[in-house]
Length: 74
Image (tube, rainbow, N blue to C red; front, side, top):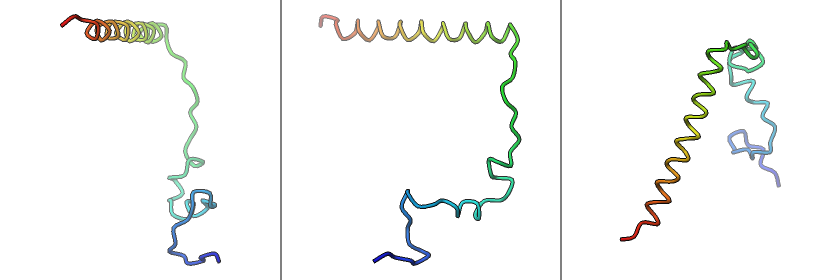
């Protein structure tokens, strides 16, 4: 027997049409303006690549330090 009480908890597989009733019209994703991707300048792209390389180097450095700490003789 299915429970048709309005206060019952719905399962994750139920239809989520009630969300449109609860949210204000400007809170819906469809109402938000779509901006798309932005072209980045050469300086910004260079900075992003430098940050990527820095993060990779720090990951390697920390990994080495952790490996060294586990293999240290007491």
